[in-house]
Image (cartoon, rainbow, N blue to C red):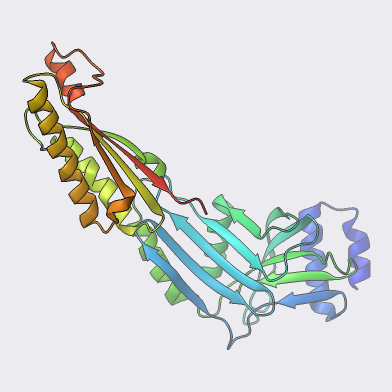
Length: 303
């Protein structure tokens, strides 16, 4: 049966062929032609392993094959990445069909084509964007998103790797709550920031205080930020010495602030420049406002 379906597939559109072939292989029960990896009813387990305002992760173990995970990160746009970490990475780049298979308790339900993908040699399998969201939707409805591809070690064998929908509901609800709490900005949005000060004061303007709060939220939950550079400046109104002292007070206040967030002092570098390095005309009120500034730069460990 599998052989006959395969011959027919050569004359049909690939997505439809793949569905027909996989269904035929499931029905034939030919263990040599088809190898399946899926958690059994008692093995199926989903867990939220990261739950913070900057990252959410939902994981599922596939016995004998590897680990599946959905990850979303703080961003202006809602994002979702799926990663299939394999115990043994692909030995060659492979075309992969993503199907939504019905559970055993759904008699008569058809398989559904989802997408055609490519898994690269020596890399874990990746799915992003709308297709990753669709996988969550299929799991929520009780179906099994399944990756189907030719075994690179045994060319005559088809491999199916499925995500089980068993015990998915409660962890998925927890994951959804985490998604709703993600910050609406990413590291790139706050890694270089210019804040403004009130005149003759070490207090930031209202808008700058709000921006500093955003930076603080991100830093508080990030364990990979390893450097904070703070450079404070003043306008040229008053004496040079007084302006330098004001700049130093501003720098110290910010150092203390970042230390209170849990950052070690050796990761915080501050520099007070006083009225040096103006970026606008000090004879103009607007220009002086621009010169009363602090520049905050964040560095992070590259994984």
